[in-house]
Amino acid sequence: MKQPKTPTPLVLNRCIQNMLKDATVTAQFLPQCEEIKLWLVDPKPMQRPFSQEEILAIQAYPAYWAFCWASGQVLARYILDNPEIVKNKRVMDFGAGSGVVAIAAIMAGAKQVIACDIDPDALLSCQENAKLNNISFDLHHDLFEFDQELDLLIAADVLYDKANLPLLDVFLQKAPEVLVADSRVKNFNFPPYSAIGHIESFTVPDLDELDEFRRVNLYRAALKTS
View 1 (cartoon, one colour):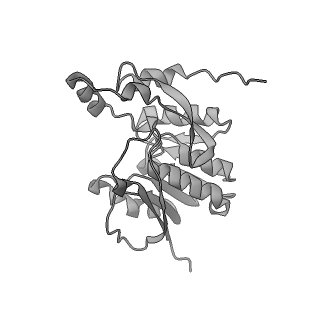
View 2 (cartoon, one colour):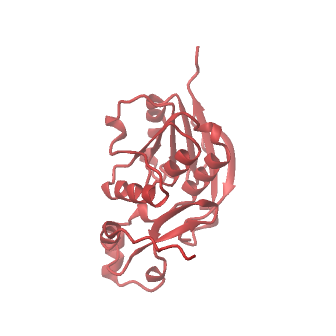
C-alpha cells in the first residue's frame, strides 16, 4: 500500500523563498545516511542561470539550513555507526543547520540532544526535520548563553571562517568531550584536538564542490580527568 505523502512544511518554503523566489524544499534521503531524511532545497530550480538580482538575494540569504553539508553527513554517519559515542549522554549539536547530526544522536540513543544554531530559520528547519524523522530534541539559539550540563558537544562544518577557530576552546568550556567534523581547515593543529579519521563525502543536494572540500576530517578532544 502506498504511503501518504508528507505535506511540505509551508514555513520552510516561506524561508527558502527569501533565497530564491521559486525555490521549495522537498523531503530527501541522504545517500550516506539512508536512515535519515531531511527537508532540503529542491535542486531543480537551482540548475539554471541566475539573474544579478537573484545572485544578490542568494548571497544575502544563503539558507545554509536547506543543505546537508558533507561534514554533517559524515558526522551523522559516524555517530550512527558508533552509537556508544552518544548513548545515554547529554549532547549539543552546535551549528545544527538542518539538524542532521542531532537526529543521528537521538537515533543512536542519546539521553538528551540540544540543537543549537544562531539562525532562527535553522532552528525551524531542525524542528521540522525532527518531525519528519519522528523524533524530538531541544532547541537553543546561543552557545554562549547556554549554561546546562553537557557530556558531549558535536559540531560539523563550523570552521569555514578563521574567525570561528576560537570556538574550539569554547566547546571545551561547555563540554568535557568534543567531536568535530571539518573539510575546510588545512594543517589542523589545535591541541588537545586530535584526528581520529577521515571520510569522503559531498553536500546534498550536491553542489559539485571542489574535491578538496569532499574530504571530511574528524577530530576529538577530551578534558583530562583527575
